[in-house]
Amino acid sequence: MEDDFVPKESTLSRSYSDGDLTVQIDIYEDGEGGWLLEIIDEHDNSTVWEDAFETEQEALDEALDALREEGVETFVGPVEES
Image 1 (cartoon, rainbow, N blue to C red):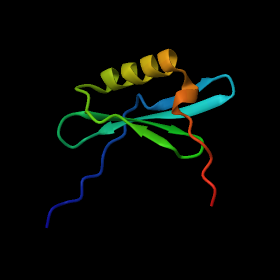
Image 2: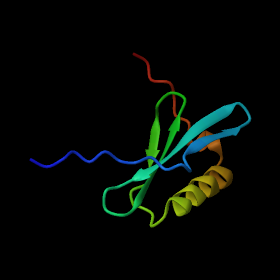
Image 3: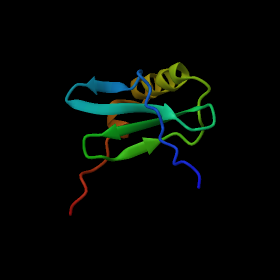
């Protein structure tokens, strides 16, 4: 039986705020030597990059560039009605 892979979260993961909007930048191992990038808004909407990054710093740089260039509102989705 194979052990279940539990990804390690990067110490570079952090919150990012612009005005009234805040998102969480999550960077974690992919189990194959790369780093995955995900941005999560306050409503648990998620944007995940398809390709892994070679380093966790590259993933953070990509997230910060995208948030600054596209605006944090691009990564904030609507509230899901239950």
